[in-house]
Image (cartoon, rainbow over the protein chains, first blue to last red):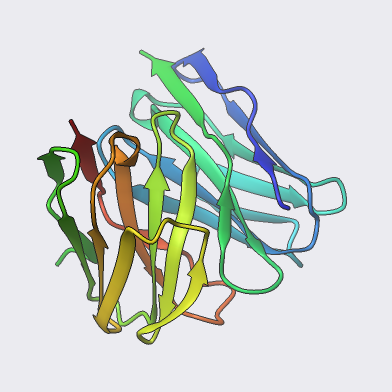
Length: 112
Length: 114
């Protein structure tokens, strides 16, 4: 059974610092891994999707890496801004079927 | 022009009642999902439908019955509501069999059972 863990559960940084968010999963047989952002009272917004054959994906200030063999993914957010404050969730898709298994999320606060 | 929309946004009801949550997507996706987010913020899949057919049912009580009249709609009906059903329910959609198709989520329905 796939388990996804995100540590730390919460993170607070001053504006301008780089953010590093960790995600680990127990079963390396994945199709892809997706990072989401969730704002309070809102749904999830997809940030980046990394295929199992890829090592990283980049979008603007966001960069996500994937190391399938060690069961890890890292989301980097460069030069953080107060608007980056949200909960960030990672989710992995199984090799068979379309089920996504989510981590518990990391709640990020960027202080001005 | 909302991509995935679900109604209502908030639902407060008493134990034992029956309620429904509706979901519609205008993305042309053929797969829709219901996820439940509990008080600890863990998101767990409940159901997945592809072209109106059930493909995932994650050991959800029979009191929960999804209905997909067409591939753009997936409604969730809950019978005999219990206190433990209180949570935020998210609808999502994607393209089936397309591994690089990200999931798109609605804004959630916060259900409170008293």
